[in-house]
Amino acid sequence: MAACLLALSCVTGCGGGDGPELATVSGTVTLNGQPLHGAVVTFLPKSGGRPAMANTDEDGHFKLNYSSTEMGGVAGSNTVRVSKQEAKPDGSGQQELIPEKYNEQSSLEYEVKPGRNDFEISLESK
Image 1: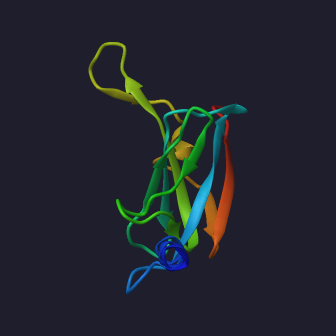
Image 2: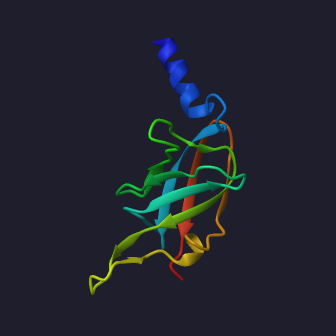
């Protein structure tokens, strides 16, 4: 059992092999003070490489996934994007519900440190 826990901690915290150093990243996203359900949270490493992503639950909570087999995000400085889309009323595609300053034009930056990270991401629609 101890060997299994050690192996799991390396997958989530060490980054393993030649890949980047990963750290556990979770948190809560709010919009105008209310939990944001059904949003996509993306941490893009400033150093380059693969982003880590998560979907928020009904309470706005998220836990990042680096890949289908690795939890966490890349340690270091990350640009954070938050996106939530819904169908346009006329059925012509999707519309973004989150202001651009938090997604495509995001200036949100968070420092992911080795170990566990828990972030409160507070967004305002204005």
